Image 1 (cartoon, rainbow, N blue to C red):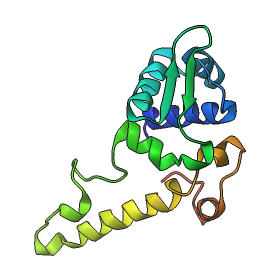
Image 2 (image 1 turned 30 degrees about the horizontal axis):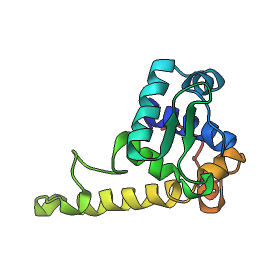
Image 3 (image 1 turned 45 degrees about the vertical axis):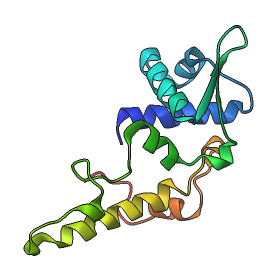
Length: 149
């Protein structure tokens, strides 16, 4: 998980907590301890994608374009990083390998599916409420889940 994804999710959770009100980039950055310039870049990318709206002026700031329960972590990752599991910038199903390593295509597709199982099923509403729902939470209970390898 890149810093860009982490910061984007943290920023979006702040917006979810404030919904339907707006927050400034300064407020989001201060609450999360994020670099302001980086926060502004991320919010700008989310605005261009339509994930957030922005308003200028004294009442200005950023707000989510949809209800927090309708925005998944996968939506945010795709906005700031692109597809969940590309291989060298290509979709795994389009890859061709020599016969001896053709199984790699299946491996990358399985990897993408496992990412989707978590990231497409966790919403900003879940995170804003401090909850990791169902199947995503079960992954944290697997043997070795909390160990870096």
